[in-house]
Length: 76
Image (tube, rainbow, N blue to C red):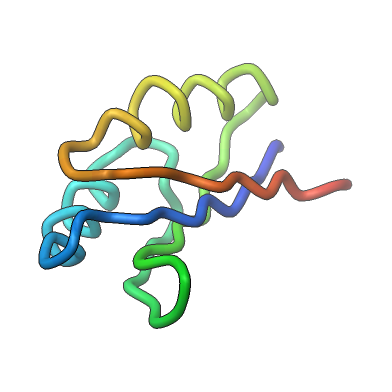
C-alpha cells in the first residue's frame, strides 16, 4: 500500500472548509488543521503509487481554496 503525507496551504480564513473537503476525498485516511507554514496535513493511502498520485493531483490539489501542496511519499 502506498502512503503519503500532503501538506496543504489554504487561503486565509478557509482552513476549516479545506479540511472538511479534504476529509471527504476517498483515500484520505486522516486530515488535521495544523499551525505553522502549512494549514492542513492529510495522510493519504492507496493500493498503488499511481492511484496515490491521482488522488493528490486530481482531487486534493483541486479542492477549492487550496493554494499549494507539498507531498511527502512514505518510503517502504
